[in-house]
Image (cartoon, rainbow, N blue to C red; front, side, top):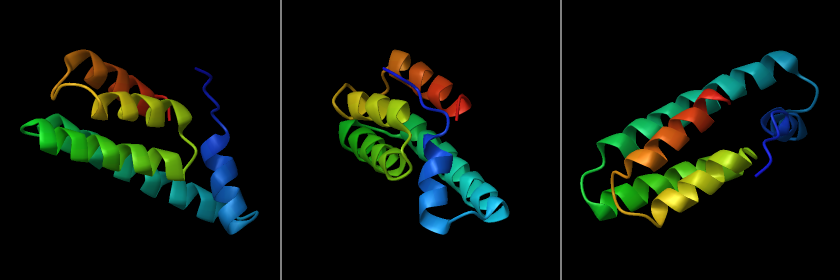
Length: 97
């Protein structure tokens, strides 16, 4: 799966235009939300909570064009709760944002 490091910035630029300060601020807010989403996934107790957290993370990633994160979150939503391998892959994807 390809990783496009400019996808998030392009999505933000399309939404707000050529405003570097605003893009940077929105990007930081996105990253904060993603980190909170990952924390919620890590803390999820049971399959239903795990799936709900994974779907929220997927939706957030999709909204900002974070394709790799979206794909891994989708995989997590379809897997067993607390899959250690998926959590590692999600952490790496978040670090690369």
